[in-house]
Length: 327
Image 1: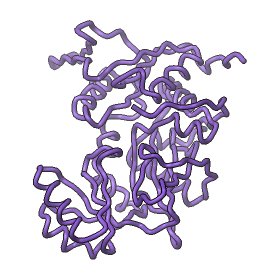
Image 2 (image 1 turned 180 degrees about the vertical axis):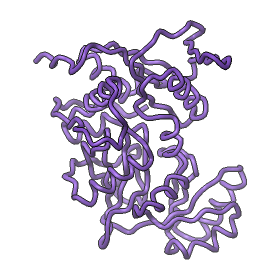
Image 3 (image 1 turned 135 degrees about the vertical axis):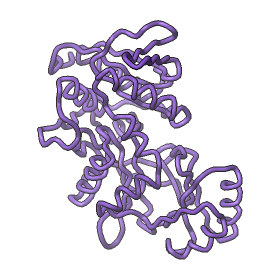
């Protein structure tokens, strides 16, 4: 069946990604081209920037970049600082962005994002932060005691989290991580039903959700650690928590991770500005890449940001297929 025509004249879309072969990047390219747009993938570390007080120029492999209508950043944590400078350079040229550098940065500083959410009444797991291992160990009682989660302040979802089930293992982890000069937080390990919820929010609206069930015997898990995904119909409290979180952080596209608790509203424990799409599409049967492209169309056409009350796109079914792991 042929793809529907684009909702607006063809655009030039730039996706900032380390590789065009990453599954989520591939899906965005496919969805954009299916709607009649030109889509190019640029590796942010190969983008050069020039400033002189009057102009903000961009080059790619030493050739000046041609203009585009909208940018979709998918900046890897490993190139965070350089990648965000590239995003800012596009912003200086008044190119609409699907996620600004400021919002991406806000989401990646775990303590800062938790402070922001807590200040606005969003439930989060109890969290402590200190620079001294002895201080952190002494403060474990404030988060409910062991087991606890130890998270690098700006670590990647894949490698930035560990579970400490005893004070001895906690002490060893703290001394090792702090000794390497990393900042970290210690967070309450919320006892729940063995699964958490990931919500994809686009343009201020929750468009898809999955439950994540861990591998047997695992205390902590993420999408990248073999968790099994199941499509989920959100409750009102889950939807509100996810949408408010994305709005407060300022992300047009966000994955908001929630923990269901026996009593009270869900707790937000993570916000991700570059969520894996293929896995969620496979679990839900929804064309989520198309939803993001539709939002990019709206932003390029002059739509206001995430706080706008206009109608947002909703996810549409797509044909299921096997998905590759996120790169």
